[in-house]
Amino acid sequence: MAETFPVRCPACGLQNAYVPPAFPCACGRPVTPPLDPGTDPVALTHRTWSESWVAVRCTACGRRDEWPQPEVGCSCGTVARVPVQPADTGVRTTPGSVAEPPTAPPPPAAPPAPRAAFRPLTIRTAGDAVLTAALYLRWLGFRDVRQPEVRPLPTAAVDLRAPGLVAQVDPTTAPAGLRAVECLWLNGLTESATAAYFALAGYTDDARGRAGELGVPLFAVDLTGVPQPVNDPAEHLVRTGALG
Image 1: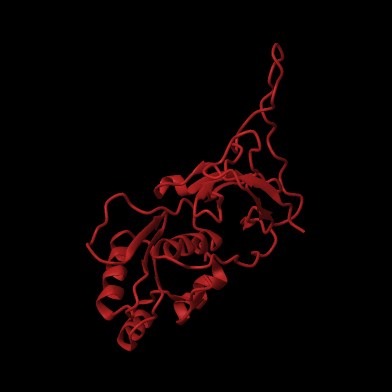
Image 2: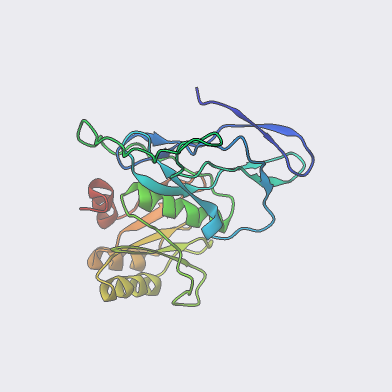
């Protein structure tokens, strides 16, 4: 059973029980952000993309990745950001002692395990849909998934980028159409990158047909936060991952 941590609300002082989430490392082991009990939680008054992620190192293979910053909601309506220990801290020392640098993690004794099951994020807002797509792409093996500072096109869809990847997330209630799929394909072609589309409301028939011709993976995302491949290119991407 996962360990429960008490987190005191910075607004009303109520102590809430919190279970840190576990995320799937590429080596197959679950990664849980190490909470910092010596630092007080901070009330979340506004949300930015860069502050929504925290660096965590896998204790099994030593891989350092960024995962969603832990947050906990209080019954008073406050959302608190839970502090996490830095991924690359050295050994804590007492005054006068010499800190030793962290030792390099030993290489895995066995080949990487098969990819662990994807852990979904319940979707309540458009931001949750974008975060779910980013987590899913990382689960597929894409590194450094980011939202560009400047959006290339003024649309309701949100762009995501990673080395070798361009992706678009459509959190609207209208099915993604033919033009959206073709524009994404052109962006991927220009950058010599894999192009993938995520939509909450699915796709029009002509969009699905054109995506199949162009080899664009299409994923449908339901409110439980589980992206589902809806065409052959998406099925292939799920089987092979980022290195396929």
